[in-house]
Length: 411
Image 1 (spheres, rainbow, N blue to C red):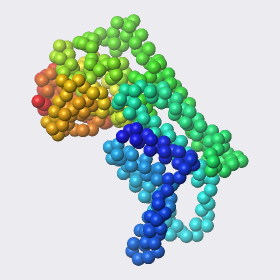
Image 2 (image 1 turned 90 degrees about the vertical axis):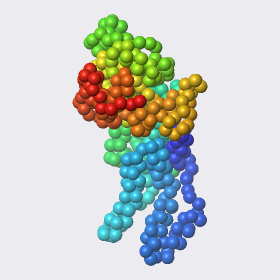
Image 3 (image 1 turned 120 degrees about the vertical axis):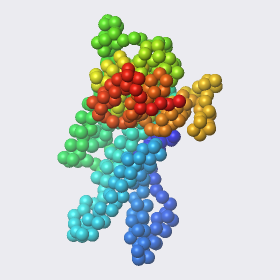
Image 4 (image 1 turned 135 degrees about the vertical axis):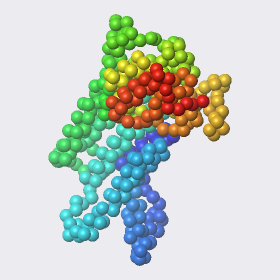
């Protein structure tokens, strides 16, 4: 579906740029207009519906964007988006019903409205890359790594800045004889955003956008990783200031799955349990996904904290389970789910089934601290950017592991 969503966003962007218009059939508009003419209780309803249908070429891509978010499993964003969409249509009618004299002062439709559409087109084009990036990561095509993604965004927003300054015009645009103050302010914001993106090409974390960019590990030239590896090489440790044990064996899937911030760990449950038993450490399970926005935000804003990194690196065996990975497993590793009775043939489906059957949860990120025999050492946590609370969570699990305590046990 991510490829489909990518294509939908590109089509919407092309529509906003004026390449074509997305319109509904005329008979549908006429039918709604007839209902509005009848009056009565339903008259205003049909009148509003007619307005929505007539303006579909402008508003359709916006609604489509919101519906794509909804289809992607998001809850809050689509609700807020559709509420804002309906509010935007309702407020003018309500406001001008109270103050009809202000109707004479409304700006006429024209070049400014087309400029709004073009700006939205640039934004749609930038957002479309998010869906292509998710598909790229889940199938491991490696065609849209972090620096390539950022290069596209830098060019898109640079062109948007030029458009706002009147240096670029589309077919339906009016000539811009001078730059207005609002355009200038928007151009300054846009170019500032471009400048903010540029250091990301060299590995800057860009925490504000962490959820919308490919993971840091996909970048080819990462200064942070180079420095971290040199520290590890010349200090003879993991760079955390303490000697730590290496992993027990080479992790399965390490050639295409990674952990953030130079952490070492596993991507297979059995390997993680085996190593945790050998090193007498608890397991930190990270249920994550390539397309999980909140997972990237947690990694950039919480995992990156030195206190969190130190505990994860020194005191836990880290296990990352990607619930949306499309890599097919060898037939001998297929499982039949006890939850839905279906055969799970990919890494992602197997990991997702493990999360659902053992913990009754199907949302990411989801963090579990586990003992060697299935003891859950602390109440599992989900998305929460409170660093101190996360440190307390890790320390509680470590303390309970040493004392032989646990919250509950999985089979």
